[in-house]
Length: 215
Image (cartoon, rainbow, N blue to C red):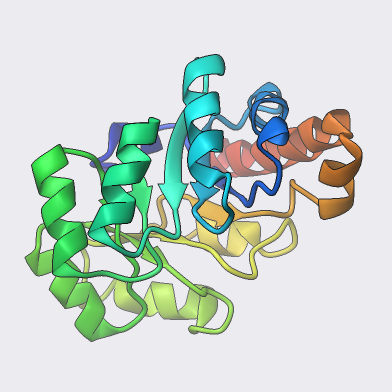
């Protein structure tokens, strides 16, 4: 793999994409993920309680490195950081997001799926990019192709990734980690079956780290 410029990615091979519908689920969900060996967590700003969930996790789950996803504006960036987010993920990119990352000194993974977007983000100083939606943007083959012209850029793909194709992405030298939500089934969340979440997280973590050890 390429050198990981963001320290929080050093041991993160799987990043759960958390869509938290109920604030009360935030802490037990985070604890279940951490218990399964996954401690870099992305809480998406897709629900009304997302910022409160980030704040709760940041304060109550010290072993979690919590960040915010689906951040699309500078105001969202600031609000997420104020809530306790330690990194920011966006499905796209903009000068406002670039400037906020620089001003607040908070890592940003801007979205990029085209050569033009990769070049724009790289020119702004960002070398680790979100590749979303991965499955409909060429998948692992597209990311592999980017390694030629953009040898110093790496990716964190999300979208359509699960246990069956996880290693297709992690096997690529220009992939830092992969994101997904398969370890967070809606029915398990709704029923509060946190043991099931921990087990799925453990399986995902073991799959990823076993591959890393082999490499």
